[in-house]
Image (cartoon, rainbow over all chains, first blue to last red; front, side, top):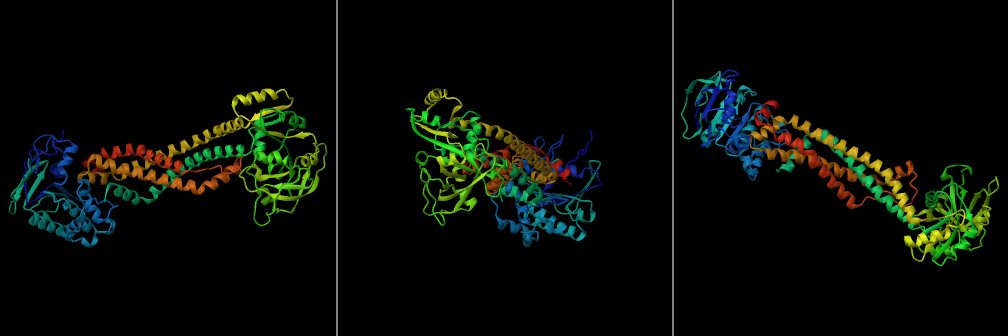
Length: 218
Length: 414
């Protein structure tokens, strides 16, 4: 049996941005899949927003994810058939929430894309698509935003703009942001940098203030 | 935005594939609707055509009764004759409500050779006893309008007067008062003879074989064909028409040599059953078309699911449950089938006349009137059937999509 993660003990706090860095195969993606309830650990404990999720099945994990965790992926993963606004509203559709276009536009304004609401993803640049993905992640007002290599397909300027956006959201909404990156320059903007290697945390560097609410466990 | 709209947007995103799949379903539905419409229309047409013969029973020369009945419906060659004495004997039967003698012969159409074997080269001449014939067909009336005013029946012994059915008058471009040349080969002779006749009336359209018939007095017809003591059929209405009465009637007159009694009810049943045999084969083709179309739909949706594995993973990651994904994919399948159903229904309605023309061209349908009748209930049934196909065809692709694990789906999609 391969141990993708071993002895990882990690708490993430509200209002905190945690950057996870490490070489390929170090376990970053596995850790982020666990934190985001896309996967469940074989052993150990995982608590999200106060709920233990260690032994939950797929449908139960979905229930935990829904509305609590926002996702941003390296490849944006917008639905090509839907407009920007419709992509942003998709999580609300699955949560059976009433869709309020004014709220959608407000979220798009947060990421600077209010004017692009009626556009299709193919009409946007990479940086704009990633900001739409952030807006989609924020629409349900989640407690945690998880971003897996969100700047992997962006140039430096767009990457820095995205991290600046994360910072604004943390400051404004008290969001917990967990982000994996290969870019150490961007990682230095996080409150805490966790370095993984061979599935173990080999270093934790506290760079800025820590939030007040615990959202994930070990 | 709801799931229906999401499903439609997904389909619209792949317009060519969606259009091809919808077209395949549409063709299958159009075939099915046309077939059912043909089944209904042809039955109705057979019933109408036979009912409008005006009599329930025919006496005719022994031979194939159904060929004879078909000849009565649409004309044809190879006529058999029975002696006039048959009519004289049978008309005294106490069970008769009405009886009419008919002599049918074929005349050459102008411009065609008399020896052409094609049925279309002939005009049906029907020698009738006007009083008893019209009593059996009270709906016969003379057409009005330019060139048709003043129509009347011929005198019983008129030697040079004819009444034309609506279609034959149009085809031959004849008006009341015009001359109509009748070219026939008299019995026992080789050379054709042409007779000049006057059109004294043109009948209103009846939607039956009468529209294509030229009527003339019985005695005149027999003289033209040199068969002074023969008839083609004797049309009969019984006072009480039932299976028992018919069998009794048949039994009474079976003693006559060379004569057979044919119930038009039996003819109807036999013609319908003959048609049903052909329709079963066509239905098999339609069923195969539908099965192929359904397989096409399943294949298309499965391909779409495979292509959109990443999208499905993302939808699950951001909150979609198995049920949500199942519904979206299932609705896409349903939308394709309903779209195909609608297309097929519209196509079948718009193409009904074309299908009818093609059927008449390809097969000898033997009846007048519309043979493809598409009713609202047929269209409603087709839409329900298309929806049923969608429900059925969507289950497996939707289940496949719903079963994807988000993390693996996202990875596969990258």
